[in-house]
Length: 119
Image (tube, rainbow, N blue to C red; front, side):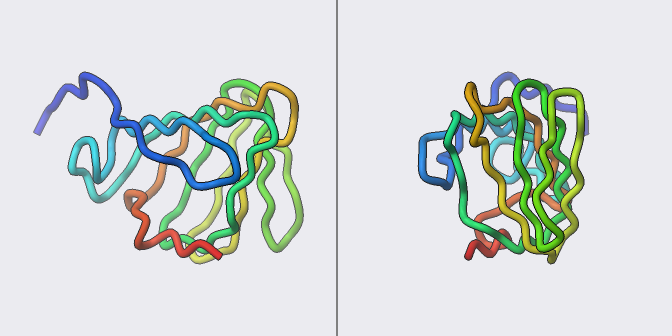
């Protein structure tokens, strides 16, 4: 069924500093369970708890640098680059650099607090 999403739903972010999450498609805003699409604005110095989610997460950085820590090490994802975090693998996101980062996150299936499994 076709549907216009007129505006995103703002979701309270997890982490040490306020972060803006705008969910366009997902469980909250569009009642979509198989995918979520959200725009993130993270300030400099932001870090969230590690997690082992039950979803694949595809992230595209629009501005700044997003740091992604996995058991394999740390990756800096710069504007114009993307990162794929596989489900059931531990991951931790942060934006330690000046001006933070702006990015799009796509989760399959859709993000939910119950399936993210934070540390």
